[in-house]
Image (spheres, rainbow, N blue to C red):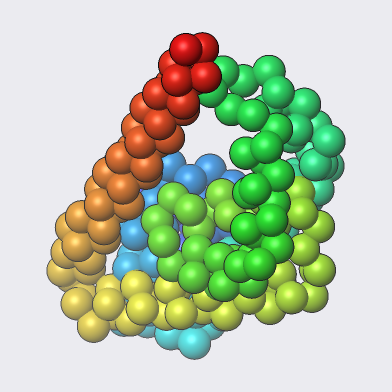
Length: 202
């Protein structure tokens, strides 16, 4: 991926530019924080910004991006999600209800740990908004989880210097593992639902 625009942001605006890049990454998950954050660390190692500022601004960017998606979920609302589910094949309103119950029990841990999982670190904000998770708790957990993730990758880029891009190789493996797990779970869901429907018809 061409990260020239991110480099330009950081060179022209320093740590606030890094924060803006991470805010965009949260809104558009295909943009890789696994590249942006080590690059911010590398920039800090060259004196382009302070290390502390890089961590604080990127964490602020993460919170801003997550907050936008939270409100997307809040505007979408439970009723609209249920209506969409009712029209989708292999999905029932009961599935939505079970998801809601699960999120009510584990939502706080999901928001916190989800900020450290590729792909889901952005998407987890939407169900939090749908379920109207109390905003102060959502912001605190999002900031805490994001700070851990951002600090780890920024420090890696800072310590690796010119070899900052090596970080992407390892996080790319983690991303592929997550995607594989999701595909397996989705496959199991579809197969089990088809089998259940087949038995019901008999």
